[in-house]
Amino acid sequence: MALSIKPGTGWADAYRRCQAAAPEAFDDDRVRNRWGGRWRRDGEPAPATSPVDGTPIAGPPLLPAAGAAAAVRAALDRHREWRHAPLAERRARVGAALDALAAHRDLLALLLVWEIGKPWRLATADVDRAVDGVRWYVEEIDRMIAGRRPLEGPVSNIASWNYPMSVLMHAMLVQVLAGNAAIAKTPTDGGLACLTLACALAASEGLPVTLVSGAGRELSAALVRAPEIGCVSFVGGRDTGAHVAAAVADLGKRHVLEQEGLNCWGVWEYSDWPRLAGQIRRTFEYAKQRCTAYPRFVVQRSLFDRFLAAYLPAVGQVRFGHPLAVDDPDDPLPELDFGPLINDAKAKELAGQVDEAIARGGVPLHRGTPADGRFLPGQDTSAYFAPVTILGPPPSSPLHHAEPFGPVDTIVLVDTEAELLAAMNASNGALVASVSCDDEATARRLAAEVRAFKVGIGEPRSRGDRDELFGGLGASWHGAFVGGELLVRAVTEGPADERLPGNFLTYTLQPG
Image (cartoon, rainbow, N blue to C red; front, top):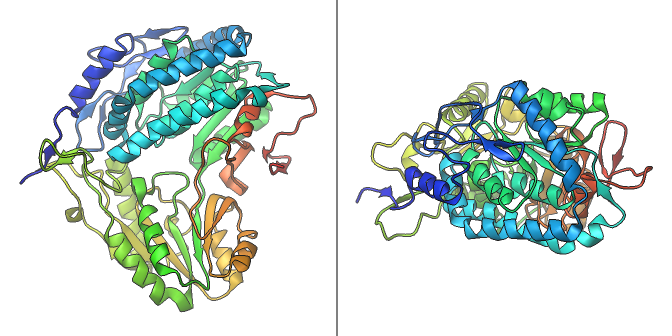
């Protein structure tokens, strides 16, 4: 029987539900920007299609530089009012917004499926992590805010498309809870409708949120350099992050800049292969399109045959395809590890990098094909990319030193501990890493030499929730660390001589 889209989950169904939930933000022909306390039909909507199957979807209404500057000035006015709101009022309004987000949880998740290709399980998890995470801050904010005050200006948020709710919306709501107005730039590649609905629900509870769309080069002057901005929060790649880092350094502006790094998993003197096999499959969730993905395994050469015996069956079990395709209308949505990449251009780029790496000496150990996926009859599959594994990527290849942001693993073989550490530190800093070793003392000794903010011993590490801290070392992070109390400290003022934990140009201070 041919697969079909589950009834009620089409893009047109989702958009109609958005209009019913927030008619002020969703017009028949476009989505609106929000600034100056209202939703506006400004900016030129860009065409957009879903990576899932090429369906036309709502595109971002791109503001020019002058419009972004006006939005920032208006946000400062609202910030100056909101920073004096009593904490009890801020807590109550944020709590009401969380209730509204929870009530629309399935719609927000469905938008994530269409806009950025997340399978249903991962899309609902993104929404749930945002809501549950901010609820924890609502309960804990008293101790975190004690002796501190809001910033002098609003917080500007520029984030990648992969986690609109659990990273971007989560951060905005905590910033607002701490007494700041929050401005966000819609990621150009995806997440517009989801973020618009979330911000509409928050704004309806009186929260000072601004949401604008635009090209980075057009909005950078306003969202990064404008004197009204109190802090810049950035999540994205190193190239763009380097420009943001240079700007905030010149201006001496508070900043949180999370950037990519090549997160590595080291395997040394290890024997628990069934455990590692289960962990390997889970590393392919969301096609490794996240900042804490593990695209590199560094393996002791003498263990390679046993590693490969565990690895290949695990990668062969990875399931991908259309996230909304079912055999029968009454079936639940499929359990997939991933859907499409963010767009067909990324799939083409990754295919080119794989072909080049193999042509220059990399050994293909596994190459999936689109035929391995679950698709609708005749659907557009141009944004999909099957898992690939390459042994020994050549030094000239981007896959040797950079995060692929797709389902491509590279494996490097080593003979000594020194080689293991050199290979795991190939990208001048990372967010996470892991070491699998039978002897825990050896694993911890090796982990201490890995330049990653979090290093797992026999298990993966993630960004974390609630009280878990997060940051990066080397070029993977600039500015204040976040997570738990540190997220609130990053967007509030403390004592005049305070040194925030973080990775700054002039110092690196690990949390105490």
